[in-house]
Amino acid sequence: MKRCMLWAICLLISIEVKAQNTSVKQYIDSFKDVAMKEMIDFKIPASITLAQGLLESGSGNSRLAKEGNNHFGIKCKKEWTGCTILEDDDALQECFRCYSNPRESYYDHSKFLRENRRYGPLFTLSINDYKAWANGLLTAGYATNPKYAELLVSTIERNKLMLFDSMVLNGYIPFNAKLEPNIQIVDNQVPSSMAKKLESPDQFAKEHNSSEKKILKYNDLPENTIIEPGEVLYLKPKKKKASVPTHLVQMGETMWLISQKYAVKLNSLYRKNLMDEGTEPKPGVVLQLQDKASIRPDTGRSIDKAQKTHIVLMGETLYAISKKYGVSVDDLKSANQLSTDQISRGQELIVPDSQQNYLLYEVKSGDTLFGISRKFGKKVEEIKNWNQMVNDGLQLGQKLKIYP
Image (tube, rainbow, N blue to C red):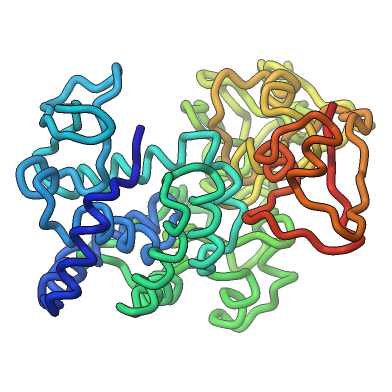
């Protein structure tokens, strides 16, 4: 999928040269809320999305944008079954997707970045570091123009698009939409509150005259977590029993989400159901919430206490976790009996033994990434992905992972 078209960039430049800034401003006013909604849903900075839309649609003036509502140059590909529009690009009259409205184009663009493994390293970056995201997009091969990252950054800074990132992080909800809680609590008479913005447990705790340590403990949360808008957290300890006797597990539910729904301590929920901590019940299983189960429910797997495990944090992907521990995504999925790449916050994953199957190379004076890649017979992009690098810069003494 070609994501950046030179003619669209040239169009934007020509528009600005002619001082038609109202077109740029109108575009920002029209799509700022769309970009902020995408930031909340997909964890992509609004500034990045909006800058890409400006560049790739020529501020909404390209033919693809005007006639096809396609603001990101998204090509048809074989899986596309919707309407199409033809436009010259790498070849004459290539097939591009068209949409009933521009918001569908924004959604399709965000979905593409989130689900494409090559862009996995982006989601390990800080959501308010637009410069790192711009460089990361270029490194991942999003655009062929070597100045694409510079164009994004200059577009963001010239139009102060980073302010929209700050708005989201400070609790702004686009389109005046009502923020829905992530769970429907079954009353257990434990006080709770719904987070209204992306924040740390410490920030949430201060708003409720509590401490970070207590909030983490009361909600069975790991350290270094981030609280998402709409997440319901308890302000007092959860109980050992629920107010109802059982729960039928639904698709996508985790033990942590169920413990939050009924305000039951997570370790108590595991003990009542004779389950090993970290295991997850299959959909359709009935969990006991008051009395102890007579048999263990079907979990599909169990965890050996000697095995290394990882608690999934907000926004983490299998790709990011695989890079953290130096294992492959396929090995992670196999160890945890996962049929898809979907994981949930609070889920405990088995981390298979990597057996230190990489060597550490210390960067020496005069080293370049190209030279190191030739030395070990690897591609530059492989080395950058293994070490989560967003550019080709090296530091003396830096240690690089090189996999066989």
